[in-house]
Image (cartoon, rainbow, N blue to C red; front, side):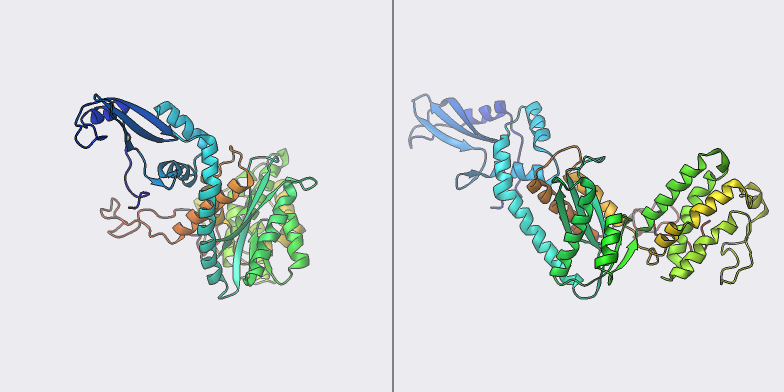
Length: 435
């Protein structure tokens, strides 16, 4: 019998007592005396019942769980349910105490984790990883990478760095690094990144492109030791950084009117990266063209192929209601200084492939289910819970989307998906400039 899949029930002691009282004595073959008393014995969540009849016969007649050798399967399944659901032992222990239900002890829980649960999760993850790597070996691979700390702020003990295959959207490897003096939490991300990359090399994966955020250590490492890899920056992180700089600049008294342009400028960066056809020169020209648009100049003299805005002609009301920046004004000069800074232009040249780590951010939210930042875990727990999050993510990448049986909107039809993306970090942008 498959004990893991069979149903379990919540049984009250008073109901169990009523059932036992209906049973005649089972100790002797011809003794059908009424059961007079019964005694309970516990082993974690297991309860065994020993009864005594009016004739004095005693016998252990029932146990609440099946056994595997000396192991109570219900106790192991409870420990497995805690881990696989991403819960914590203490929280479930409090739940059981409030319910007055028998539960396993803390030492038993950690014993089951170490001896049964962690090895099972590790075995499943290695089988999954082998399949993902086998697909990646067929062609040169492109991956995105991002790190996640185990706690908010700068007091992290662990850094978990993960690589996702851009083609399949599946996690192919992750590495966990722990703070050990003199290594600080700031340095962990670079160390974890390199170990993850070396793992792919050692397993025969040819990495041709890596997309990351603008981490200084990772940038230096790739430019010095892995020059053959095309290092791309995450468009979302870069747009966020530009937005933060513009917001900071807009708070000065000389920059009145700059605030309303922050989101359109970020949108313009997305459009420029998406439509540049992987040409860095084309990308820079598209990016810098925004300086003319915000000054209400939609056609200009230029030696480049971009001498006008690519959006549709603006209406008179749109022009009248837009807060244009005056050429040579303080806000206009501040914006030009930010947009044309050498460092930013250099970074923008590394978003030509329009890569972003949006799928990795989704994966990181799944990780928080299994290893929330408010709870501390030891290294073996961090590894196992990260493996569970990875298995969860990978198994849902190709999940079939639900479809409608009874559409409520006129724009929908039978068989159309139940949800759609209205706005995302990178998808659904139009072919024209968004500024």
